[in-house]
Structures are given as structure tokens and as C-alpha cells.
Image (tube, rainbow, N blue to C red):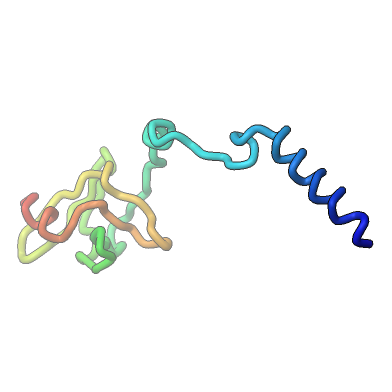
Length: 105
């Protein structure tokens, strides 16, 4: 059995020398990831909207035709752009912080 160890080691090294690095470690350039468009999120009135930290902002009051959502925050109606919305762990989430949303009234 000890006779096969050098042969196995040699064949393993030969395999890694023949296979290009790009095949062994698949990487995606950052530019390619950024170029992928996000799938629009369908929001509905009554859904809870969460901020980027995962904290609840409150229920959606209204959904605009362009995908933006309106909610009441600190006694003000604020509009959150649809482009900032996504689903994180099946929750409607904006990429904005609570402070950023509050400044949008």
C-alpha cells in the first residue's frame, strides 16, 4: 500500500498543474455583480417595512405605481423609493436607515 502513496501524490499534483486556476476557484468580478439588476419587489399595503438594520419602521400605508411605498413615521407620511426595497429573510426591507427614511418627509 505504501507503494501507491507516491503515485497518488504525483497524480494529484499533476492534476492541479494541468487544471487552470480559474476552473478551480470560480470568482466573479465586482463589476459583473454590480451590473446585475435587482428584481423589483412587490409591496402591499399593510406589510411591515424594515430598515437596513432590520428594525421595524411600520406598516406600509400605500404603494405607488412606481413601486415606492408610503408609511407613517413619527407622525409624518414618508415615501420610500421602490429602488431601495428588497426581501431580506422574507421581510420587506429598505436599504435606507431609519434616519434616512425620516428625512424624506
